[in-house]
Image (cartoon, rainbow, N blue to C red; front, side, top):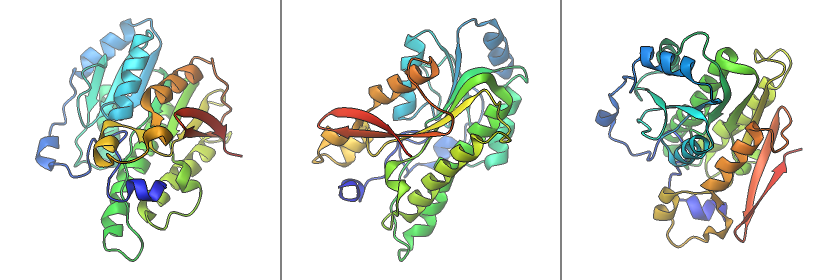
Length: 277
């Protein structure tokens, strides 16, 4: 079912709304607030602080709104401005990983810390190994899922509270072989591996912090509904559920062990979580 539902649609739940973008519209690389404003406003805040990487996508927007409605100060990092966030760092999509990190570190004071760093950036592209599309798809998936996860994790090594939470986004189908979407499968499998590596004692993160992954199957986004109008959405996971779950975990209202990969399984409109053994 998963393959039939997404065969011709590229899912966007994080960094990019659509894969077929106009690069000219992404040349803006300035921060919505100056670095001085970001630093001063953060230092003045007493609320819990969240950094949401991919804050302008469908899931990211829901997370921003959910956390802000519950008293959190939110910084969004994306290639688009997120108007609902307290502050933004806007990246240039044409830059490489190192330039993205340099941009972020230049905007963040070295003493800034966050209670949680959520990486909900990502996307989807199909392509079997025999297809010429596999090359562009693999490159795109690596940029959207692996780049974003590595960058968010690196920022966490410097700016996450000692007892904070780092969340990355994997995918249930990529726990097994994905012959029809090789690039996507490799990228998400890499994210799963990164989570396990970061949970090790010598990972570079605080030993008292928690890193975990959420693994959806199909998220109920406007883009997915537009791209798959005849699909059975009763098996799609609502964005509000995901954002609410993340809020519960970082508030310690829901259990989460370090290194957990949490599957989100929705059936007949009801979502349950299951930790991958």
